[in-house]
Length: 311
Image (tube, rainbow, N blue to C red):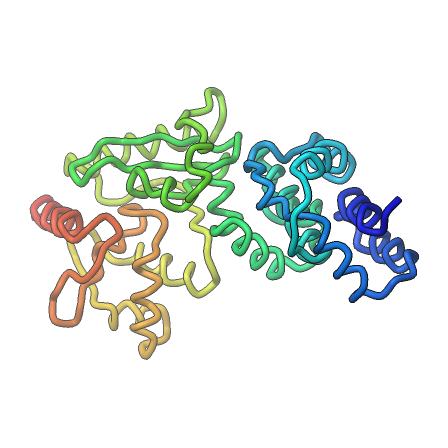
């Protein structure tokens, strides 16, 4: 078997087992430099081969990935310019994507794909897909409920897992995040008999009451995905009372770091759960509305509505 073919076979079969892969690669008895030169002249990357998100998959990532995806890679032809390390990253991320689509948790998907370090996994995943693993799971997972609700500020999409609301955003945002994979996004659906479906229904009902002026707080479990700093800011946003506003400086002080108003402002603008986490209640020091994910007019509508109903 050719050196490049044998290398590819090992990467396909043992991508999830770092120790075995390392031993077998060392047993080939060639330098890393020579192996890289031979390999990159032979194979194109899985991404360049035109394989879609959902065509790369397996019932069990370590065993079947080599049987299913390797055939796809081989039939794609030979091209150029990918190293064994780069190929391994793409194989691992393709396997992780498949597991996330099937509903695996992020740590489980990362581990099954051969990652021991979550930071490394997040970095590779973002570079390969253009989004975080959490965002990918929200859009593509088979066990996530999604629904769109028409509201006075435009259609909002609600996304929920079995445990919590993950996202409330402008409908259409997911297509922008998915980029070239937008045509593979599953249709919105509420999973019958599943807690994720019940959460979406509850969210729809409570948002309806909110826009009707009959609800000021929300009784829903929320799980926004972000760093500890981001989660801390979003937690304190929920402390701003209905019908009131705070400046970015005041919000920064609420989080315990009054000098971090600029950083707090950036976190406020990337809040993934609109209205339920009321980032619209934060304004500039001069009283200006500043930015809002759903648009300034939507922010103005929400603040005016809350002020009216709070009298």
